[in-house]
Image (tube, rainbow, N blue to C red; front, side, top):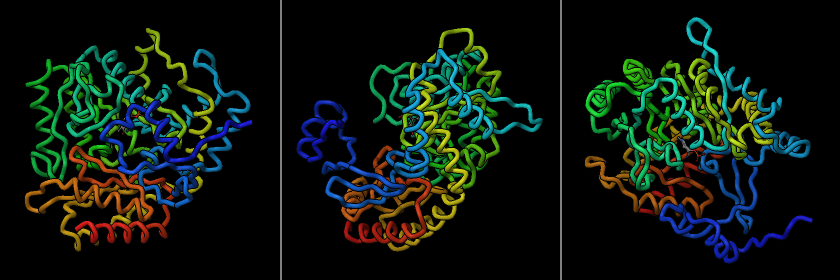
Length: 437
Ligand code: PMP
């Protein structure tokens, strides 16, 4: 018999205080508590039966749709047969998924680049492992990372996270930060070149001159959807390599077709990373992360012990295989391009009519609206952002407040968002902007 569940808000709030320290955090997104009871594709239902469009994709994890039947069946079948098999033993399901992920990676001009995959349970563990790999392979300690970037909550991942609010005291060192090439409010203006010059300067001034690598989110997610301008990713790779380091692409948010144009965000710039880190969308909600590395780079790892007890868990990996299958069969990358393009157009219309909107940006289904008190000064407007966010919630839209000043509304829905949702989203936002002013 399944154990009974108390679905009441009061009961959940009381219990939640005892299991979830973050319930005390000011970063809990909603002022009023929310309990989601059910999900199907791009929609969620709360405990009272109210329906929402999930523009947050449950934190970008739900790539192909909530409780997608193909993913649920694949995981349920695997769990019923053998839920877990430790990585000490060989299991064909993770082996298949590894082969399928490796096949999505660039082969290089000579077609001879080979990729290997190491599975983890989360994005930050994968980031952590990529840091170990980069340092082991290059023999260098110094890392470069971008301000305004986010790479996860483990202490290693925090050490390369460039948003103070996401860093706690005492994180490991040997990290130098470079300014992010934000085309709306970056400190060096627009284009890639000044930000590439900044990497060179930083290597010369703030490191030993030899680096292990640079970590770049192909599109900064928690930072408020900051795209890398053309030439930046390839230029950053060149500069890191010139100092003996690797280029590590963090695709935790931007991967799996989310940007609409490509499977991986780094492909927009033609750069071939040395290591690619992924999580979230790979499992459609099942806990799974992966480091996909060029074979030569991963080789030194075999000299030492390295395994994650739940890494390569067959149930999560069965879900991962189903995700790749659904992405392909339902043409979700193309859908992200089409529906995301239509939504972006509507957001740009809103910008014409609501002066509080300073910037609209993104591509595919990775979009954002940044709110400002005044378009000239670009002073962030977290109050209006919070008001719009709460009103959208009332009208059935789940968004996310992002960016260091929490003045950006981020839209990263399941990739099955439909054309008929676009009107509901744009109209809901329109009403919220009108009421918030
Ligand atoms: N990298 C990026 C770009 C992320 O957005 C996140 C999570 N939000 C992580 C890494 C860390 O992933 P996880 O929370 O699964 O550890």
